[in-house]
Length: 210
Image (cartoon, rainbow, N blue to C red; front, side):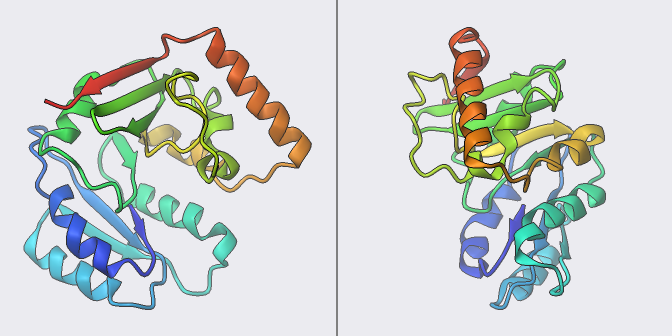
């Protein structure tokens, strides 16, 4: 996860990330994006309390436009495990075995999986290669304000909540993170997403909260 001026959200949500029931073991990496509030102090406090937490930071000299991508790259480099989840500190786990539930449902052949939260559970959308998911990773899709009906479009369009990928393809996947498109090319991409989704409605898996 990355954090920028999110001290209050870290206080509220980070303990839940650090208390997941996951037998193989895991780590939580938080990259401070040059925060100006008490984010660094909050991270120091939780780091002392939990051996699962690793923290690092993005130098203040980096430009805002590429800050998020660079922060995730720093976190990816620090990670020790084969599988990595890019998440948001706002996405507080709803159950204590959420990480285990996601891990059990992952497609072993997929290089990248997008996750969508709902009130009843989690939907996973798997892609065999990061290239297949490149259109979904664009900033324009992550920031899409008018999210189309996910039930109708099978969760393929806009605002995924987290990403799971193998670490060895992570750097390549992140190269699309801040990639900008012209309005014409973006429209073409969204039409492509819609078309692929209409002919592949079985590409998602729903996990219901118990």
